Amino acid sequence: MSLEKDIESLVKSVDLELYEISTVSEFEETIYRISVVSTEIVDGKRKPVSLDECAELSHLISPLLDVTPPVSGDYRMEVGSPGIERKLTKIKHYEMSIGERVSLLLGKEKLRGILTKVEDTKIFVDVDGEETSVDFGEVTKAKTYFEW
Image (cartoon, rainbow, N blue to C red; front, side, top):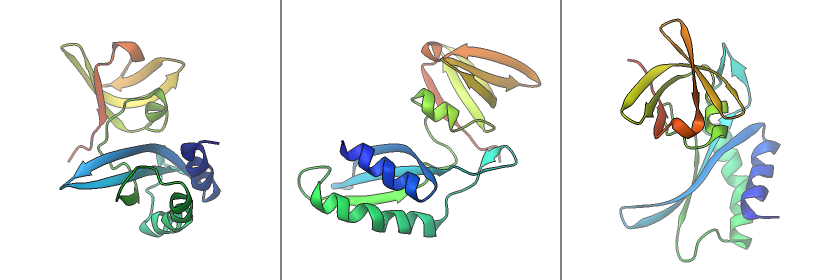
């Protein structure tokens, strides 16, 4: 089994869902970032992930990374939520963001609205009360956003 699959199993064991794993460099430090979301839906949106849930998951994953380091050299592991405003790069990300506000860039055209559903590679967005569908392949850039 791959390291990502092992991490995904641990994430599922605490009733969370793996959003993404990335390795980033910030201020000359390597960070192995594990982003998770809740499996629980409240009022059509995913419940926020608590700090306690992230800490618990971090304690579960840490021994695994001691045995199977994800990168060579020194690094810091970070477990957290992907945030209220985040990039959508995979169909899975769209599926995990149903009910949220999204901004899609389709070439030069911008589409903003509420993500209502995902069917295969079709993304459905409610724009001012009118449902619009877009094929995943047409999207050049996408993110969730929070309206202040």
